Length: 245
Image (cartoon, rainbow, N blue to C red; front, side, top):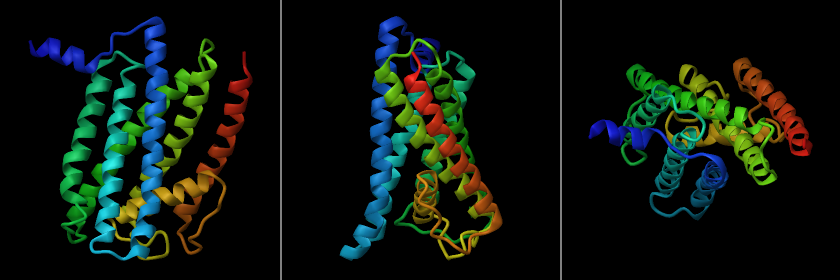
């Protein structure tokens, strides 16, 4: 009984047009969830400007909920690309660990002191999140460059992968900041607000807007250079793939 339930949860037994339709649907839903994460970043400054009670906590809670939905959809989409139960199960464990430990560690209404043990926990959360993101990016890239993809799947896939890369680099910046809290040259706390700022920075770099943090450390600028170059290269690859017959 348990084996059949696990088989149903872990493996998506689809093929042909049904599988293609499911992939397009997942690309659309995931892209919309990414838009939700990005829009929630704007709420932090908006709610601060409105200055109502618990405005920061409210913005952080919305962001955390949007990020949770996004990460779960990453795992759900992974089932379209592989039937390897170990990969799917491991990513599911990572996601559940990130969610439940994150509820405690980065709860905006219950701030925790920044101790060495707390930083280890945060590093573990971000590492698990980054593993899930990189795994799905890899399989999605392999899917995107298949020859038999229709134009709708190419378009939605291109948008989805591009935003996934920006969000994944946000997790990478957060890992650097856990090692060096002052790596951005300003005091940004190692909790939900900090992650929001790191993702915002990543999206700015990916889109070519440059860095608003002039005193960031060399490690941050080195990673930002890699991200900026990858972003430009990926745009070229996207254009070439969309034009490919």
